[in-house]
Image (cartoon, rainbow, N blue to C red; front, side, top):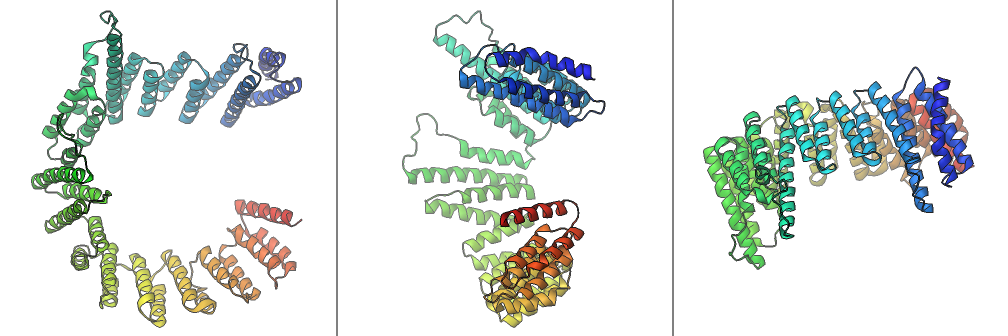
Length: 598
């Protein structure tokens, strides 16, 4: 092994001598480079090989290359690149080849190899790397697409890109993404050739002898890909994705029309088709010769007419295809348009009325999903349609009696309208729902009570909630209860609540930190109380939370009534209780704190 390492170092000497001779590195730096290279070589020549050693070696060489570049730029020296940089690049490629043959399945390693070659190697070398990678990872369509894009965009070889896509499709005949990118590539290639031909014609050059096949210029190859792909991959979503790609290319109008007509003919029973057809009305531009709307008012009127045409298509769609999915598309369109900002109040009013109407129709047909009821009620509340919101909320609760969200929405409407029935509806909700989903309702009830009822009533709600809510959900409730206690009765009330809860597990660190913070905000902050809270918190979290131990030590050091002599004992207790990384973190924090006090 020593002989191999020695041979590798000797192979480096010519480039290192050149670096020293031309003044890019000093003699001392060259010696340091040789020592570091020897260490790195030793690690990748051992019997037990480690991938990280190869990665570190490559990273060192890349840093070395970048340093050479910076020094060349600084002194303005640009010669001897063959003897220096090319030699290093060749060596890094050798390291990558060894690593990728040893760890063939590591895609990230292959991608690092590709990134290196893109920056430092020749295009022919990178092409070989892609070939080697795809021979092993032929099961990953994304890698085929990456290689084909590189051939097309960087190497300017449409034929190589085409061959890669065809090979990829033999491995992945059902891959929608491969067909989409192959389709896009052929259209891009056609557009590029059309521009080239146009430039030659403008320069009055003879294009007869140049190779501009008509089937490529007209997008016929892309059309063939489209026709083949829709026979293999069914569904409106894929069809629409190809149409969206074709619409990026102005020369492909005939192809766009063909795809659009096929979409309507083949996928009439898919909501996505109707959704696409309806939204297309927004994109229709005025015909040549038609006057463009000049004023804001005229533009708003034109937009209103476009949206009316969209809604006419949606109305036809929900008649033809009366499904929940179709109504969802219609309502989502209405909500999106309503969310668009406009200063025209008439257009905004039209959008709101259109949205309310769509919601009502879907509700009457019982084709409205739960989450859209929530959006409907929120919309009505936002615009103060309280009576309608209450009617919708009542209907939604009847339809989804086991949904905590629907009960919450009904209660939200009742609270907004200051109904006298709020407390009774809360009780009805608890009777209808499973206890394990009721946490949001308990919090809502307590928050409402805080603003509308007496402290005694609110506390009674919190106490009922603590008994009813179990497990992890109760943690949030305890924090809310403690916050309310401090807001309503100050630190004294918070202490009382803390003592009543201190044995009701589970807890969060935040629960204890809150009561500690409340105590510290008092003018007469009692160290005895702080100790009690820290000790109680450490009983629960002392084995995992190093920050609690550090804050306890700082409190003893900084509080006027603290006992600095206790800090040593707290430190050793922490070291006994903390485990693994938490113990290491504590030691580091404690050392930094001590250093800051020196």
